[in-house]
Length: 101
Image 1: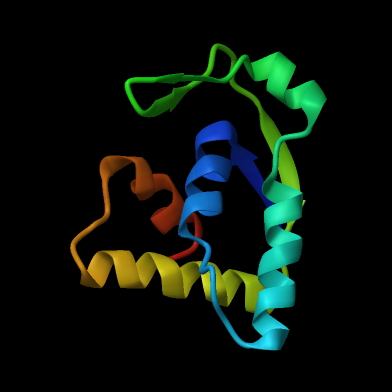
Image 2 (image 1 turned 90 degrees about the horizontal axis):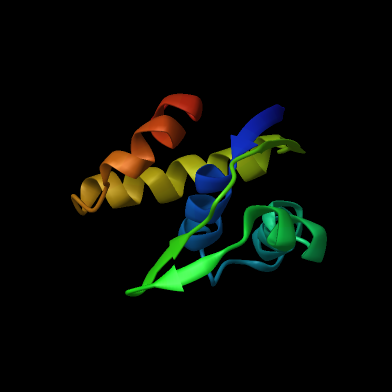
C-alpha cells in the first residue's frame, strides 16, 4: 500500500522498526529502512540538527512510500508493542491512526 509520510512519520518509523527478526522479515525491514531513510538532498532540504538530544528540522515535506502487506504488519506489531508497554507518545498518534492500531 502506498503511504504518504511526513518527516516526523519517517523518523518515528525508523526508530520503531525492529532490529532483530527472522530472515524473511529482516529483509523486509531492511528495505523499509532504505525507503524511509533521508538521502543527502533531503538532509540539506530539511536542515536536520540535533539539539539537546532531539532531532529538529526547518522544513517539512512528504514522500510516498510503498509498504507491502508484511511490512504493514511489522509496523502495526511494533506500534502495538509500544502501546502495550505504555510507551506511545503524542507523536505516534498519526502513525497509529494511519496503520489502524
